[in-house]
Amino acid sequence: MTETGKDTTVVIVGGGVAGLALGNFLLRKGIGCIVLEKHSRQYVEQRQRAGALDAGGVRVLNAWGVGEAVEGYPRGDSDSGLPLLLDGEMRQWRRDDDGEDDDDGVFCPQQILVRNLIRVFLREGGDLRFEAQDVSLHDIDTERPLVRYRDADGSAQTVTCDLVAGGDGYRGVSRTAIPEDVLTCSTYEFGYAWLTVMTEVPADPPAVLAVHSRGFAAQITRGPDASRVYLQCPLTDTVEQWPDERVWSELEARFGAPVQPRGPIRSKQVVPLRGVVFSPMSHGRLHLLGDAAHLISPMSAEGMSLALHDADMLARAVVQQVEKDDPSLLDGYSDACLDHTWKRQASAVRLTRTMHDSGDPIYEGEFRRQIARKNLETMLEPTARVREARSATA
Image (cartoon, rainbow, N blue to C red; front, side):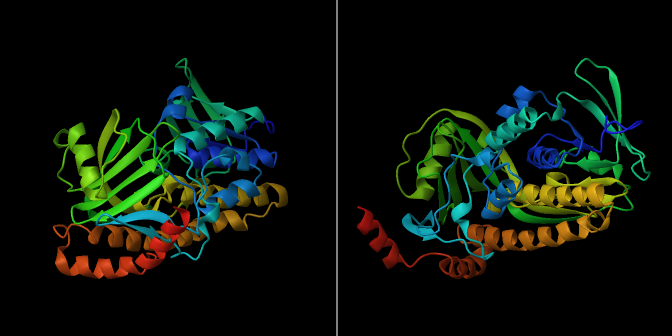
């Protein structure tokens, strides 16, 4: 215990990227914390989630001395850009809408980052409690909040603390501790979905995108022996409408070339594209971070980076409170994170609309398709330059 009558300084609910990053950051500063995760360690480490880290996310990990969590994974290449097939013609997409250099971004699957953050946290003596069920938050408006849960044996447990960090995702319990008349939810629905398909097929190169008259498509690495396929589809589509053969043939149609190798498909899911922001991100002694506070269009590939940004901001605020008895950063945490979140949401909406409206006109019509195509051209290398680059490496 950190002091008489108190179990720890911070209880972190959720053992995903946001919660584990925050735990590692606080541990580096000698600040006591307990991470509660409802699932087993095996489940968490094998759970497949989409993700890539931008340069900002990598810098956050490095700044806190946790850069080893992404060492050895493919990095972005701002010189060559990202491959994008436009109606079957290879182009290069140079993503510079936020003014950041993507050279330091990495294609690190989310489950690998989580696995590495768990390893580092436990190695450094962190307190991580798996299979913590029925978590509930109490007295978050007081100086001594408490968190109740049932451990793996079913025994009731209570932990008292100074602060609670809610990093248990969009469907977690942390956000429900904020009164409904305090919390607001802002949502943007794009009007289409992704069929996301987990395959036992490697992706080489690590990521390829496609814009085609049949819709958006992508194949992105999820490790040395796996990749995830994304296919734009109507919101009304079901998994049953997409047998394995149709998945591969549709990917080939949108790529404009055969896709090899094909392989076993592990899972499929239809995911509506949307953006969600909850405000405020703080109430009393509770502070939300990661998907508990916001969802961003998966087209932006910024979910993990946003989670790390929140963890970085909250960790700095807690450190300042503990070391200097200065609550100013904690008091400003919600506003600062929301400002950053809305900037990234604005970028994600522009990008998602450009990529998807440029394809099949059944969603938004021919006028929007032509506008999106013109916007897309500003994001791509000129065709002649791409051909020259390909010839030089041939």
